[in-house]
Length: 625
Image (tube, rainbow, N blue to C red; front, side, top):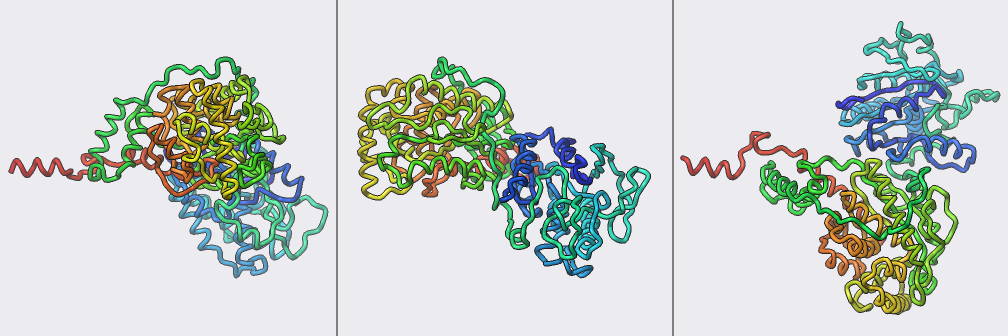
């Protein structure tokens, strides 16, 4: 694609290679929103196998959003490259929504098509639209077939009018179509000299059957199944009600595992040894503050947002800073032996269930991240269950031990977990991630987190213990006793961060420590989440002094220990929304503010550029008159 945003319509028949070609047009981008117009879940096993194969072809740059409201989805992030796949299934949903299959020529989708075209015009980033072309598949000679055929032709012509480029894909071969080709009365393009297929005006794929080549005769009454498509995530049969209920963001993307590559597991030798951490560039920070003073606003009028922009510029080593376009959330998961002591409102088996939920894209962090364009990855460090290989590549063990009575993990396991966290950070930074967020999932994990905070800040258990997932009074007392016992054991190793993690932390917390410290070593900014992540950050700053300068606190949770940890690290939270969920959710909610801070510093006009008089210039004019 070019430096200027380009809208490209890619047309083709079933299995022609049109989706693969569309994806290739976006190869140069580090972040892509995949707008899938069909559902990603089904009870049909064969169908889900097809979905899996299509998903595996797309790499971690893609964030999938399932939607039938393409206009809304495109407007939600016009500055992020998008791949729409495909218009056939989108059109089917629109016909479903107005019960139009038996309406014949009376159906009117002009307003919906206008809305889509307006959203495409408003895109400031590259966008590729995949659509089946009328004439490259069979369509039954039924009223429903004619409705779909006519509307698809009209839709393709209208979308082509707002696109700078239109490609036709046949048998994997790509033909760029010239602009201004005439259309017939149905809206389908005529055959031109540039179209060697000679089929551009024939019928489209059938909306009646998911298998056009079936020997079963087509019925006059259609189902809501869209025409077959070659490469997009296929759409199984669905009801009109399901199609109408599908809205932007309601079915988050199933997430990928972390570090799934052929490289060997990291060597844990000396994993706790870090090179000196260089701080963000102070000279750049000064330049950024000077730039803030000449932007078209009263000095300081954006409050703390201005200083966040300065911090991002200093982290990047450049002013103005580049936009933050490739943020990634990594959720570190693990079970804790202390959870069997009744310190949580939920049983330990919920950890594995929630890991599966995050991996399937159904957790709060998935929904929040999907809204702001952040990738979500989950890694099983010590879940007390078997998880898929793509999630458990770095797994150290099943669950930790009970911190009340014994070390949670061995020193060797602590090193292994630290090395894993460091390797995960390296993988993401090397792949182009420009901001990291650490999240967590583990029933009972606020107990070891609170032990770490209490031990490092020398606080009493009753000062720092919170309700976690919502324990009752009896549970709170059990949790307080467990934290007291853990802190008693932690005091023996308080000056040895590795031994401290082994004694009362666990593999998931140790991996988070390595991740946060390595991010600082790699000069990559991090938004911290709640009490568990901030506890890990305290240990990371012990292992790699100065790492905290590369972090910003996304929010303040209701856990009493969290504010104590923030004070210890001299961090001021961006948000205070009384949250206590975890998963990285609070940090993800703070992400748009951090992104906006960088954008304002980078894109806002100065007084000179805008031809606006600033206060000092006006004052100088008054003095000379």
